[in-house]
Length: 222
Image 1 (tube, rainbow, N blue to C red):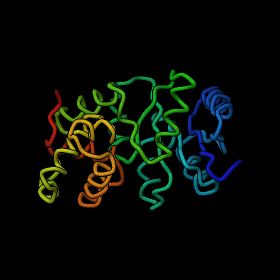
Image 2: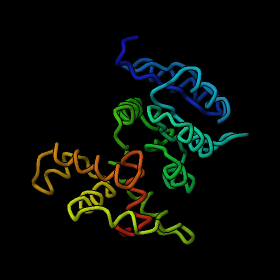
Image 3: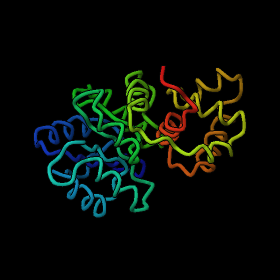
């Protein structure tokens, strides 16, 4: 295993799912499954032991579920571990809560081998898995639900006009390259804006930035 190999932990209460994903990912170059966990408690223990780069986290598990496990993992202070949530339904209401808890994206359990490997690589690279239209639809759908807390607008006021514009495009699922083309600027300029946005808002990644944009009503669901 080379130093740049993406190390993956699979957390799911179904042994067949864990084994199936292990076989698919171990067949991919540059990806290695280093461990499995049957619930959230085991996932946290394996993370401390194995230090994976990415955790494939099932939402619904007995004992400690995926949402609470994701929240505890992020609160542990190790930003290097990225969480990719696994779900059976693309509009599972719990997925939105998992994104708010710190997950970097989500993946349907019936995803193809190519989609699974792509998702792992994207999340491992520090990007949010927000490009698929289904993800944008999910965020938009649950941002409009009654009872969704609205983020105090004070932090958004710290953003410049351009940063606010970039944040809105991030929330709509555009990549840095797509944002650069839309605004007619260099891609590196967009990366700089995104980095400043995260620092100013005290957020971990693009996924949290997208959730913030919807909850603070900077972006309104279509």
